[in-house]
Amino acid sequence: MISDKVINSFNSVEKMPILFLGHGSPMNAIEENEFVIEFRNLSKKIPKPNAILCISAH
Image 1 (cartoon, rainbow, N blue to C red):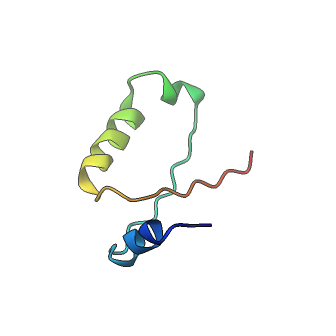
Image 2: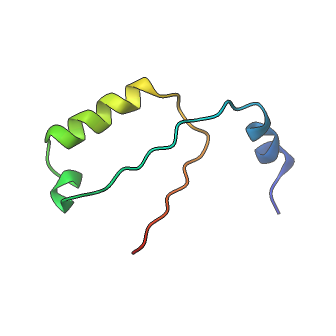
């Protein structure tokens, strides 16, 4: 069962952007490259979410 504290934390949250982030090469997870740099820059521009939903076909 979900606690009231968790449910209430979502009541006052503004709508967040929806992002599609294709993983591309597995090297993006371990190398410093243009994709990693842009993901890091993007994280500074959007509000911090309370939760993240990740959907994968794998």
